[in-house]
Amino acid sequence: MNVPPQPELASTVLSVCREKGHLSGQDMETIARSLHIPTSLVYGFCSQFPEFTRPPGRPLLRVCMGPACAAAEPDADMERAMSGLESRADVLRVAGLTWPHGSPTLAVRLPGEEERMVQGYRANQLEELAMNLDRKDLSAYPFPEAMAEYEVAGVDRGEMSPWLASLVGREPFLPPDAVAVREASRDPSPVYELLEGECVFPIPLPQSGPPEILVCDTVGPSTEGSVDLLVAQACPHVVAAGTVLAAAATGAKKVVFFVPWDRVELEADLRRAAEEGAAAADLEWEVFPGPTYIPCHREIGVAAFMQGMMLWRAASICGRDGPMRLHPPTLVCGASTLWKVPWVLGRGGGKEGWKERLTLLAVGPKGVTRWVELPPALSVAELVARLSDAVLNGGRARALYLEGKENRIYPEAADRVGIPYGTRRLVVLGEDTHIAGWARRMLSAAEEECCGGCTPGRTGPPAAASILDSAARGEKGEGMREVAIMLERAELLALCPQLLRTFSVVRECMEFFPEDFSFRSGGGEQTERMVSGSGNTHGMGGRR
Image (spheres, rainbow, N blue to C red):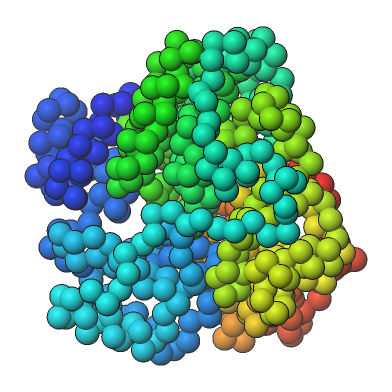
């Protein structure tokens, strides 16, 4: 059945969720009657987002499954303790908690109360949490910090990029005037170069048809300790100005700021900033609350939610071309990309700086987090030296995980590191990290991040996880090369690029850390590298 988009569906669902904190079956029937659409359509749409449909009256646990938290190896006692919590609360395993936090972390909430954080937990802390849930008393746990003010490592204030200096210094920022807007429209090439470097999907040129809507996504592609959210909260006026100028450069008729539905203060800040920034451009604008977690490729999922579309349907339309294929054509950019636009257009000398130094959040094995600025290509020895004082605290790295537009992992023994443009975070996996176990937990997170609209998305992550489990038990089955081929084919056959974000990293883990994977095929244990001669090198440069 060809169901047209229902843009009013999302806003109606959000208004009910904000009023009641959840959606019941009766709420969905009421929404369907008010919009004159089938009840099944409302049920199908809402069921895609567990944060809207959780049962009321029960405690809620959200367990972070992001890459930094996945590096914390769970033992049998922790798994038993987590099972005990599942009988006391609804447990949601999410791709990453957006709040700043250590590793591992879960968020817990009693009905009618604010969410609290349990950080760096082990089995005994989980058992204690179970007792506190029975007593309905969570006062021992802190509330999450809305925003962390991380230090900058290895860069003097005068040497920082102007956008990082604006964040660290909280410098006042004037909204763009009509002259700046006209200049962005007259020469959009710097903005196009930035967007092409940092966005996943092709950026349409003005002559091929501009986007009707430019969306600033304040969560971005990586939800764990979201850099985009951090930037949007710290510099709402800069992000709003960058969004307006990017709209002028791309010819968009409307800008939308997509914010998590439970970040009311951020919504208010962006409204104030947008009112000032959009005035000079005579643009239509809107702040659009939505779900934090979208089980789909992020850029497609944001556009689909705004239009009230099923995620699988949006993925089938967008494919590898992105939400510009939807109606209206939509361009989705992360807040951390739009944050740089005012300087890319020449303000404060940052026109070429974004290509020469990449601004990342570095996360150490013990949760120490610092801002760093790095060139797009450097030796591993140089990178580890820069990170040593910043986040390692005397420890050693086993691997470096880069997260953002595309995800990569490098062994500590690699010669060179190429950091893709659009990278948000660098997560250091410590020397005691078991890479096969980490990759297995990343696959578990990938199961929660696919919409299920295609067979590779539905079956790929659990099938790959099952193979790794069998290998860990020493059972005979597929060899390492066969598993890598299966993952690569699943990436190619999937509707959208979402699987690539995890599967490419799992393949790199098998390539660079074969000793952690006990694959047994018909010929016995197999630990050779999948690609001959690729052990100590990796793709270079900022883009590939």
